[in-house]
Length: 225
Image (cartoon, rainbow, N blue to C red; front, side):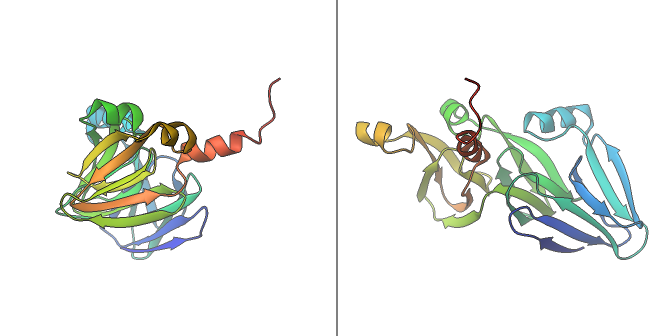
């Protein structure tokens, strides 16, 4: 499978498929496809699989795309200003924020990951349930704003604002810590809590979480009063 990520602020990924290659995507993500492409929509993983995807911010049904002849093309678009990242899934599964999944090759398993810590689910911005990708293949995910990757060593920690965690290697410890110092809490502008990710592993930080952008836009909307 060949691919090209096109665009900047609202990008799309264009895939070129050969016969026997299939990708699946969120329903409604497809932007265009050539006549060689066939689409089939089903509930991958059955009803239980559909329910779990819905819990993680995805759709119960997924659309599958395959090509009848060599060179069939299909394109999927970003639903929010940001980046589309190509992730190779193999020995290390990946955990992503809700809404991250865009499309993937058939060998990738799309599941959910439950936060083990109550505080992380309540205050972390990522919620109790995240999206988990395992198996073997390629998955394309959506990040809010720009995306910065950092690789952490064993025991190394990285703290970030709640909602900034876009993706990380599965198995990394994700926790919530209260900001130290009363002045920092109420005058620092970062809120009461920070998300802490502990290595070893890779972590992707997104620069403009959807909730932050919504808050900035709301300042310019007309008041109901």
